[in-house]
Length: 360
Image (cartoon, rainbow, N blue to C red; front, side):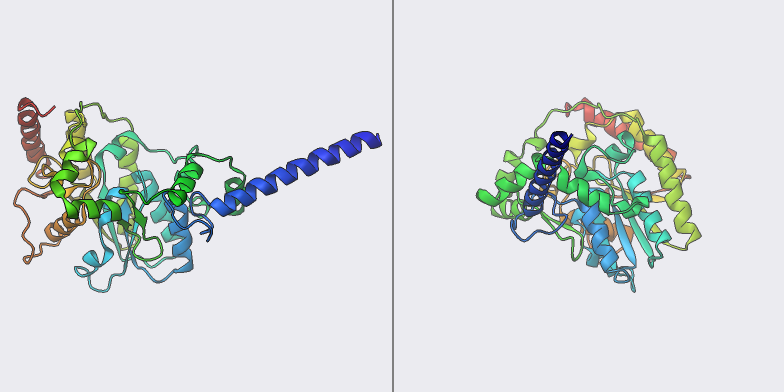
């Protein structure tokens, strides 16, 4: 009996020792910058859904307005919007691959925790909101902050410390032991919330044509394979966002992303057009998608997914009707239930011409 007890104690001590060792390694490396560990300075991946809410809880009251959307809204400087909305103090709550379900969760969190809310600047991405809805649970890097889901943060910390080394772990080691990447990205979590494409901006400034030539996504052949899968659920989330904003007198500004033409090439035509109609059934919005002088020019993008800061300025200038900014006349259309069918007819003809010209 004593032998078995000693054996069990040895096993328990070994398991505990291994956990402590793994936890210590994960804390030092801190692959998703949860603990802001001081040992490895470069953070190629940051768990934005956690770190941004963690920051906002510490700075509650500093911001009264929020930008919601995927990483594509990340290049928008909050000060750009603040100048159009006096009295506003914006934080850019951009998170990778966000859909409207997550935007709704964050808005509900702010309301239930009595954040001051004056404005919501909501960017609606077509592909994410056609194809994904549920919260990510398998990928630790994409989980919502526990407080957003009404849960304790302690299990989150413990699971993070006990997670075996992953791609995030390996990438963090590489980023701190190899020369700086030419595509370095900085997340300004503890300030504006925006994303800074530091490496890409240097390359573009040095030789924009070479950058475009060397960026594979600008030259990829695509088919219209992205179809509506979870659009209905995301539209319900959007309707709930609109309802909450109306009930709490929050100024809601909705707009559809100026997707690069290569990304537009991947969207099923009729599902995309139906998406425009479905958004109009919920509320009026600005649409910057389609093929126009901005989305057809690769100089405006880092790759086929993310637009650059000058495009964010054009979007804001169109929305707020800034007479001091020259916005291309074909960039941005205000869509309501009354003109959506006309826009859809024009957009269908535009896509048909685009495809007929051999762009696919």
